Image 1 (cartoon, rainbow, N blue to C red):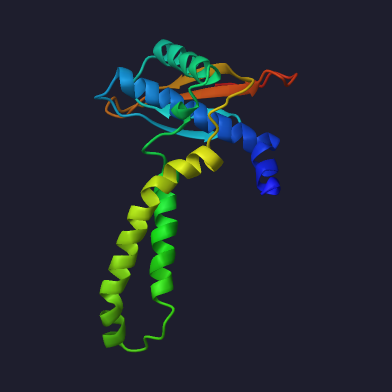
Image 2: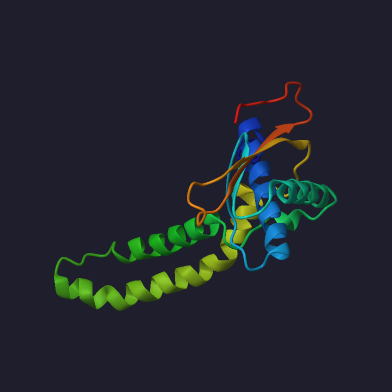
Length: 186
């Protein structure tokens, strides 16, 4: 288990987890302010994306608010109910149970059909079982609610040609404990 903890705290992995947590916190706060709007995000080691119609100034203010609140102890802001981790966790649990149901010999179509209700029951049970596991996997593995020295260095707005499509913002981050400031051209 200490190897897993070490891997999760290792530089690039830690940075992705902290950016992912900050992305979720930002989207959670935006969703509170604008409950009728849709927001999405994607994180990596250099920062994260926020997709959704919001001004750059409002987004910058919300990201800073998310950082402040997380650093003050609101680590639960890093968990988001629509995170892809929840879907993957559900797929792994339900898919594994469905696969286990296929391990017994069933060489004829009739035997496979007879097993169908068993597979449906296992997959349904897997989906139910996975509901609390997704947020737990977020909390323990894919996100971090403790941004530590994470700082926002740049926010770049990308407008779509089609006004029906959402605005995209790239939020670049760095660790304040690291010496060099990361920059990139827009």
